[in-house]
Length: 121
Image (cartoon, rainbow, N blue to C red; front, side, top):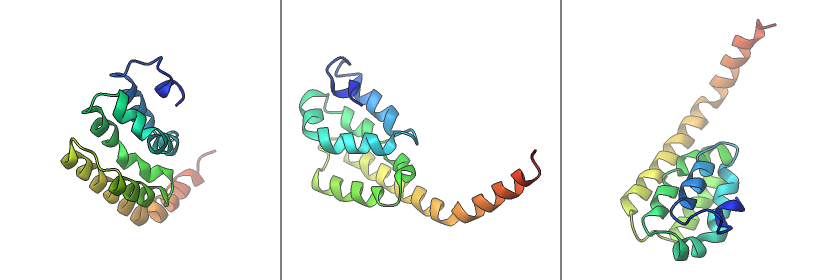
């Protein structure tokens, strides 16, 4: 994350780096926290159309824990994106769909995996 905002990565490439981290289960929470912390800097230093490209990876926030998505929604309500509003709304909707699927399938998936692995040495 530090490299993303260090100035060592070109301003047209830094949003892609951040989006890649946000899209990964292992980095999604860290990336979202960095977005909140560096938002003004991102708006000032990165191309205008890059913000929506980063936020398109929001559906991955489902992996960050149950409190992260509502926090992200509230934060975005307070920090609207000037360009790409429709795409951001679509990303928010995809995150809601992911949350609903996680809630519905979590117990079923755990028991199915336990059953499948029961006979594995």
